[in-house]
Image 1 (cartoon, rainbow, N blue to C red):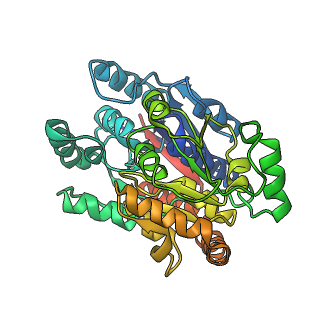
Image 2 (image 1 turned 180 degrees about the vertical axis):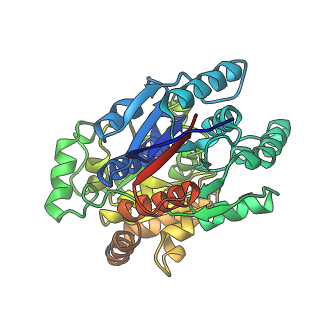
Length: 391
């Protein structure tokens, strides 16, 4: 049979298959596609229409398609795989980039190696569950790795967790990055202005010690541990604010002691970061959490549980005051007490984490490194490719 080859010049098209559509994963994808569009790639995002990601990705320069997928596996999986396969055929991407466990499951089954595929766990699925479900999740990750040309981890500790679990893959570590133009340090007046402008803080003394936790209200983020720690706090006038929404909201509201405020979801967390004295994130598991990076870029010290990515987020020496064991309310309360009652230490940490984060976690560097993986997979040297088709 004779084959006629033709060529056409076109941009490198990346199909981002995404579920979940809120929280850190959505912010990572939005920042990534914004940087990719500016760099001359053609980002396409397929995600559920509900939630903030679809609109934010479109505003960032992505072509957005509806992919009606729920967060967890179940009876809808077959339909979600079929829908993902249809989108791949329609979009004809050069690379499929599947984000988080559910998209990684459906996307890899849909593509099965026919298109260069990058899988980004954003924390491993088997860490999020227990018992037989965890065993099944791990078995899938070991099997599904064959259908990922590259597994992209956001921290060395996330990669190490995957390897120790027996997952064999071609790996890379590219730390999460943040938009340093949006997350900038403020002057003391910005802190006062932020507190005065935030309605939930009406009636809170201007100088009251303020701890802020930004994250989806869920078991992963550990706000229940934080509330148990808050009951141990003895810092006069201290207030705690939980910024976010999620499935654990009702149980957290019922368990919250006095002095805790719930804001619900926020389209812009920057005012809360600027209002805070300390940002806290007591997660049970992560890949590399975004909220602490955003806070540190604004010059706010953080307290994090010692999960994947936490130590790698910090400057050398920061672990002494910023890291506590997971699920340890006493240690968390002690670390928060030290920072709230020692302004000199808090200010020194603010300067240190700000310098480190702004030097090491620029999203433009992250996007360039990710583009390098794409180009390696499809044999490119830049964002424009020569596409070959055979007839």
